[in-house]
Length: 62
Image 1 (cartoon, rainbow, N blue to C red):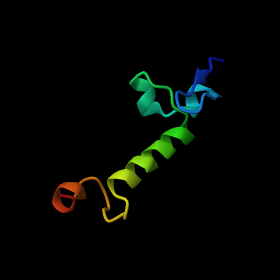
Image 2: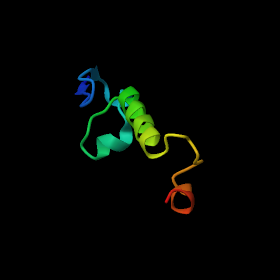
Image 3: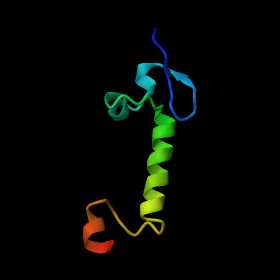
Image 4: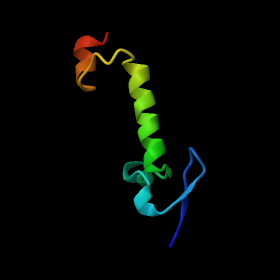
């Protein structure tokens, strides 16, 4: 079975353990790292968690 290296943590993972959206873009991120990076991005953009979705950003974020 082919193993992929996570670009974030360096761990070896099978294809089904990787974030499928990023794998399409040529990046190999395990699901755990992808989730952590998404949460960090959300916290940066919306530190007080005032928005239900990114659609709210244009109405409420500027």
